[in-house]
Image 1 (tube, rainbow, N blue to C red):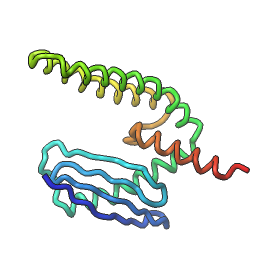
Image 2: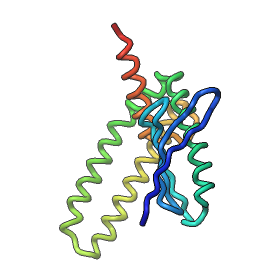
Image 3: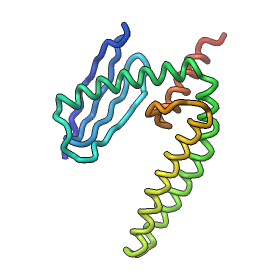
Length: 168
């Protein structure tokens, strides 16, 4: 297995966006924004494992970089709504993380028959968390934007850091 890394740049609405893309060809890639909002990240997996050439992935990564920028702008402009979402999400996410950690610890003690069920349980906890996040988005009146909890957390953190740095 090989991971390729390259820089991506895109001019979007007069803003220079820069990031880093990492690819496990042909099925998985991640992008991390370097400018203007360092740390925003997104990963994608293509289910059929042979969908894209490297050129297609590079184009997709540039497009996703602009989507990350847009998501950050949405969060910035409607900060209170997104902060409410994050505040409602975090306790649930922490609960799911504890359950996953318990299951992973328990994994070492079970036989192979029970391991299949335990792996399924861990996978379903992840699905549960994702579905609950989207239910909360709906409850908060946020239209689905392919927003992930990690992008939300990072965005709120960057906004709060920037806001706190401007305080006297």
